[in-house]
Image (cartoon, rainbow, N blue to C red; front, side, top):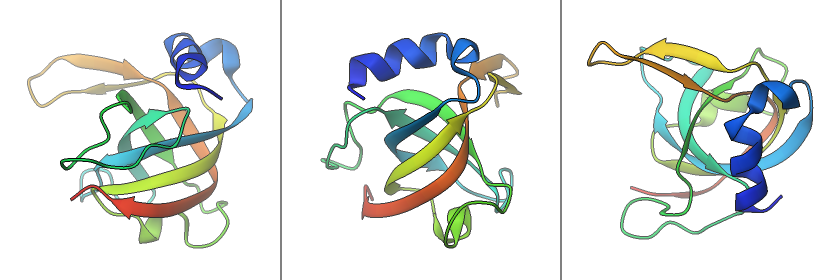
Length: 121
């Protein structure tokens, strides 16, 4: 999927519920707040190599969930700053409260497989 196709899907992810895609991205939050089975990541449709500590073309804020069904170690082996390729199932849009007290709704993905290919840090 191209980055543009990915952005169109993410813009209206609810209509893509339960569909499978291969996505790419890098983890922006993997800590005690997200736990071992959830991460927040910037995602995109195409694989990009990190430059200057981030992946510039990968900017769709998303939540990735692993309910213990992902192949391999899943999210247990993924940390903040890891760049990845993942096979996912699109979930329903996910809403969460930001640290500033606002609410943000983002696409959610359920992991089938995830593979780390670089670190942005």
